[in-house]
Image (cartoon, rainbow, N blue to C red; front, side):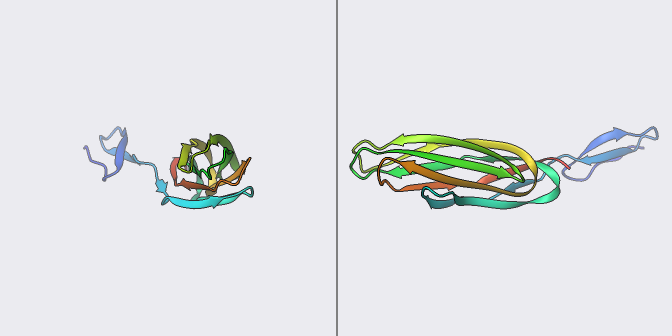
Length: 146
C-alpha cells in the first residue's frame, strides 16, 4: 500500500489497492536570452525560440523600446508582434523625445496562447524624424497542454 511520486511529480489518484498514480506537476518552461535589435520601418526580428511539437504554450514577452533623441522634437511609434505558432498579437507605444538627446524607453507587454512551432518577437517603428530606435526582448513560454 501507499507509494510516493518522483521529484516534480504529484499524486494524481489513489487506486483501490492503495497505490498512487502520478502526474507531472511542473509544465515545461522555455525561456530565451534577452536580445537587442535596431528597429526601422520594416519588421525586424528581435528574439525567437522553437517550441516542441504536440503542445500549446502561453508565451510572454515584454519588449522595451528605446528611442534616443536627436535634439529635435520627434514622435516615434514602435509596434511589436508576438507570434506563437500561427497566432499573433501586436501592440504599440508612442514615445516623444522633445528636444532631448537622452534615451526614452517604454515597455510593450505581450502575452499569447498558441500551438507549437516558433515563437518570436518582431518590431518596427515609424517616426516624424530620424531618432534611432532599438528594442530589447526575451520570450518566456510555458507549456499549458500536451
